Length: 304
Ligand SMILES: O=C(O)CCC(=O)C(=O)O
Image 1: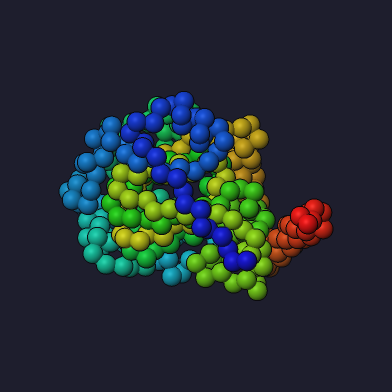
Image 2 (image 1 turned 60 degrees about the vertical axis):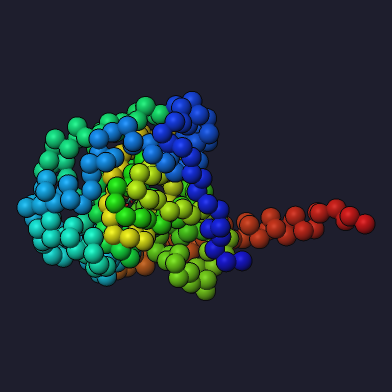
């Protein structure tokens, strides 16, 4: 059976949802949702568009990363090229390009923009470190989990994004690399021979448009495609359980350090070993599913 992402991410009225409704229906059960219009309460909702950012901080020089050169085993650290921010915005507004702005520190350059929004009271425990993401049509944020295991609220201001999500319990079938929060599978071009686990994986899909806020629970895998050039902002809240909080702290500190050190020492051998471990884990997960399917087949009572 091919990769199953037929389920739609539910869309609800984010303007009127109460804290209790959000908690009971999505936060506590850790279910993704698109909250339409959640940010209508803030000036950023109507103020933040291409023209505003070009005028507010167009002169800032930004470092850009080429998605063509992205290696699934590595984290992008050095920009490929530089450009004035207003030129980059004009570029992504009009046409596809492989250049991405990755975790651009907008608020370091313009701290006053922090007054354009707040932290919606449908939730508490916000980590007050917002991030903005800018990208051209066609660019892809390759599949990953957020390393701190936080809950994420991703709001769209310009353009559209296609979002594909998988729950954290799908990690083995998605070939999660050990000591890392990435996977090497390409869900848009699934290679079922190399990654047979994809035959069993189940996820969901949705489109984020202007004014939509995607709630992504802790540890959710996300693959994001810019269907149109645009930009958005993410805010996070601390992971809901102590085990997720500890896991996030471990990933951010110990695991990240081990990964970086081993990559420096062993280079490609380290990546190959991680892929091998990921394959073994996926094979075990497939075996369990097949055994269960087999068991169910043999124990289904005959109806005649
Ligand atoms: O919107 C994007 O480009 C990336 C967002 C993301 O990966 C995140 O918020 O963790």
